[in-house]
Structures are given as C-alpha cells and as structure tokens.
Image (cartoon, rainbow, N blue to C red; front, side):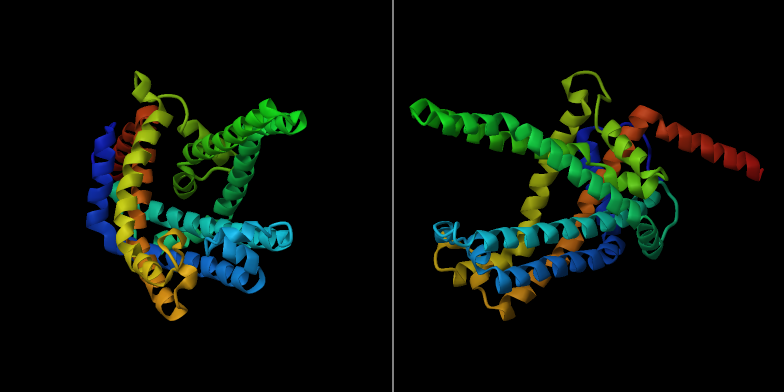
Length: 334
C-alpha cells in the first residue's frame, strides 16, 4: 500500500507515471477492448457519413472549404453528417468512460494494497455501466445548458448588430461572435473541471445517481490549501495542462504513421486528411494508433485516480479512515 498523505502537484504526476510503469501490462489488457470498441464506433460513424452525406464528408474530413459555398443546397447533408458524428462521439465517450471505471477500480484498489485482478475490475465496470451511462447523460445535458447560457451575451450582440445594419452594427456583430465562441470555450473548460472525477466516483462510491452528480461538483470546487493555488480548480487546471502536454507529445508516436500517410496522399499540406489515404493502408495505421492509445490512456486514468485520492485525503481524512478501518479489523481478528 502506498503512503497516503497530501501530495504536491509534482508528486501526483510522478506517482501516476511510476504506478503506470509498474502496472502498465494489466491495465493495457484491461483497456484494450474499450479502445478497440471506441475505434469501431468512430469508424462506423465515418463510414456512414462517407456513404450517405458526401457534402459533410468533404467539409468535415477532406478539409475542402468549397463545400461551404454550397452549404445552403446541402444543408441537410451537413446536418445529417454532424448528427451522425456527434452520436458517434457520444458513444465513444461512453465506452471510454466505462473503460475508465474499470481502470480506476484496478488502480485504486492496487494503490491501496488490495489484491484485484483485471477481470474483476472489468466485471465491476460492467455492473456499474448503467450509472456510468446515467451520469454521462446528465453531464452532457448540463454541459450543453451551460454552453448555451455562456453564449447568450455574444448571440445577443450578434442579433443587435444584424438589426443595426451599419458600421457599428457590424462591429458589434464581430464582437458578439468573439464573445459567443469565448463563452462556449470557457463553458467547455468549466465542464471538464466540473466532471473531472466522475469515473472515479462511479468506480469507488456506491451512491445514487443524483448524489454522484452532486458530489462530482463538490469534490472539484472550493479549496484544499491556503492561497490561490489551493483552489481545487486552479490545481486541476495546472495538473491538466502539464499532463495534457505530456500525453499529447507521447500520443504523437502512435499517430505518426497516419500523419506520414496523410502527407504522402493529401493534395497539399493545407488539406491534410486521412480521406485521401487508401483504406488498405489507413486501417492498419489506425489500429496501431488505437493499440498505442490503450497503452498510454491508463496513465491519465491513474492520474485522475490519484487526484481523487488526494482530494479525499485533504478534505475527508481518507488516510485516517483507512488506518482506523485496518486497526478495527486487526482487533477483530485478535
């Protein structure tokens, strides 16, 4: 069992990487099926768009901006393609969330010194899948509502600018467009922080669905230490930035074959796309990237798990609770 105490930001990242280095094989085996399932969902969505919504294919995947010129004529195709890819993305997120619950279960119990096999963690994630689904539905609806509210000021300025029909109105419209996109971006970032620990809560806490939703916000709000850096969302922002940069750089290794193929087959560097790559070459490259993703993704899940442990140690005395529980069991055995 690892020593439980409040950790610095650097210690959280260091322990996450160290734990992954010792246990990457069982976590890879545990997550591989979810990575392949996510790839199948994404690829299925792509094939549907390619076959039924060619205008969306040209705009979304072939990076052909000329499709915007005929957007009015092909609006149904663009909307249909967007709907298919949005559904694929949501299902991809669901599969990834269930996989994160499985990896969290394995990592958390192993970190606390309890014996657990990957198969046991997998079965537990299947049992908890309905709650994962319910929480993701609530998370999606809440995020969309926050994005809509955050865009209201910008949309209002755009509407006023359209009605004004003069230079000031045009300037207001541009400013409104900027505010709308900025508001949406801030809302998305807020959502990432707000729901950062949902997989860990589903994996480790037997609470009703609504209580899990509320608790996910409680654990990522407020502060856990004095000063500005003690705010939970500030700590999470710093941690996510550092870990995100590291994982992004590492993930380039798995995606390198796809990048090379796109450079070789795309009409120009300004229109790099896998649409132009022959399927016989693209699919193996994508599968290689998917397998590599199954290797490195558990690092991020372990990182989330250690943040969850650290917050509970700081706020709820998790380390003391576990020590008291162990002492009580020892006394009972004696």
